[in-house]
Length: 297
Image (cartoon, rainbow, N blue to C red; front, side):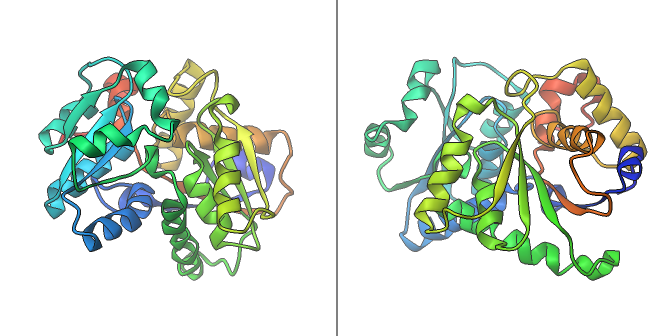
């Protein structure tokens, strides 16, 4: 990537474009979902049930996979019923929606949360919010080999670190598990009190790899899915100069955090990083308005 702030910092950046993997089962979502869907198919599950918000990239990818591969999907949504471009897509792709309110959604961490839902949807496979879990993380470990196989195409023999957005921390944990040599930087899309650090630590501990190196960077800019004018302008300028489509919830904030990191001189000159574009461009529609440039399903 060629951007003025990278050149000024003496930092080289390549982008792993997971947004180009598939138009609907997009970004890191397929890598997190695939192990669960394989498990569901092997068990002869009747369908898959999961959780997310009204703009959830995870539910959007799951609904698209269900429509494409012919299995039933159910989404449990945060908050009160409302219509968004994402929920329109979910229903169009055949997902059954249930709105839990905010208190009901907070209960998702309780040990007995799934019991009534799996009684109602007997034979369904449950997947945690955002694909959270060691299976989802291990699915994302494949990104390491995927990137390494393409290094020669850009004239690199190696690189120093990974940079990506962190929502649940599942993809970050997968990179940490898959790459024991390079550092992993996770730009937090949510405030620190959302528990990402604890979730990553839990996944690594479950995998027996608690000592692996990574760093979480504050990038939420006041809250999850909040778009301020500096972030909007950064996204539009980056798209114009760097020809890289971004969205304001994850990838826009993550790349802006990297710019700030570089401008503070926190990366050595000559550093080479891979930025993972985690997809989620469907989420542009609710926040970017006329600048969304995303076609409805």
